[in-house]
Amino acid sequence: NEGASAEEIMAAFAASKTTVVSAPVERKAATFGYTDFGSAGAILSDKTIHDLGIRTVRFANGVLLNLKKTDFEDNRIRYSLRVDGGKLHFGKENAVLAWLMSAAFVSGGLEAHDIEDLRSILAGTTVSPAFAVADNYFGATGAVAPADLERQFQVMAAYTTHPGYSENALRLFRRPLPEIYARLDAVPASALGIAMARIMTDDDPRFALSPLSAIQAANFDQLKAALGDILTHNRLEIALVGDLDEEAAIAAVAKSFGALPNRASTGKDYGAQLQVGWSSAQGNFDIPHKGEANQLGWRRVWPTTGDKDQKNTQAIDLLARVITLRLTDELREKLGATYGVSASSEMSDLYPALGQLSVSTAGDPKDLAVIELTVDQVIAEIVKAPVDADVFERARKPVLESYADWKKRNDTWLGVAAEAQTNTDKLDRFRQNEAKFTSITRQDIWALAKLYLGKPAQFTFRALPDEMVRKPSEPAN
Image (cartoon, rainbow, N blue to C red):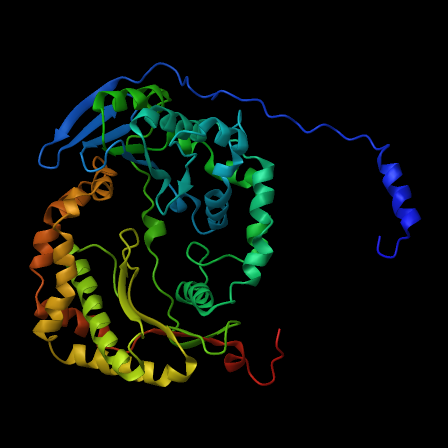
């Protein structure tokens, strides 16, 4: 204790010698406990999509497997695992459980192995204890050496059948939350991102960050109840791309996921949940941040539409590239050679009405008026007439160049193979991608500019220093 005398310190030290100290628990080297899932699954069908070179296998229990052998990466297989559901399964009312599962499900370990034991068992391999939550599926993507593929499937299968739900993982998940939430407005980018999601979706917990109290209250009992048996019963599709021994890969799946009970052969209809649109709110939204006084975050957003029409999606992306070039030229001339700005298009391939074209930049609050005036001028120019041919070609060039090696990348092929049996539209889009892009004209993007940018932006977000946003009567925190 502070102020204790030397005698008191020595007396406390002597007393401590009589305290019984438990020996540290020694972790014994364990062998992986999930290698036998039952009899290997039988193959019901085995076909090939010849023009894409993708082999599609269906097991008797309903598991789907897609294989694409390539020579782009030595000793490397990229994998995708998708169990239907994901955030859609939790819906709006249980959206907080998707956050919990994404952050703590894997670290909850398995029934036979906590996460530290599992990491020890997997040390020296390329296997990852991977399992997460995406918008419409549970599962994982990653890469593994061919020699480790069977163990990778065993680990992922174990997470669907014997998750551990360790309370220690829950404690570790909760511990940093107060500090994380306290720093959400520490810099403009974070403050802007959090506020944008809340305002544009009317604080919908599927898209916006839930209150700290709601996150802290989420627990594994709630998660287990919400999941039920979907990890073992919903439709499941696996894709493997890379340095494959196809027969060995099929055997590895047959002995793991193929050996489990029958799964649904069709996906669940989440149509009602997909009817989501942007908020009716509009105007300028000033967001306070606690960063430096010379820091500004800024974004202007025009709603568009979902990713239903492939050429339309590509054309809006190209329009965003044109806007980026024009704004970069103008803002660098007015504000300096290093001034950065970008326009981007985000069009959901899940929610039919969720699309947005936005312009973003960061800088000094003193430049706010110049930024907004310049954006207004460039957008008005693009709406008024077709873009200059030189700017159009500058915008197209990086995309055209990317097609040179686009089909020589395993990550490209994994995106195609991931849903080769459940989403044939994605196969057609892949086949038509380059041809549709090269068919886009200046008139096409002008038509889209008039349609979406010919009216005022619905949202303008300005992340400004706290003292610039707070009213004089409001106290500082």
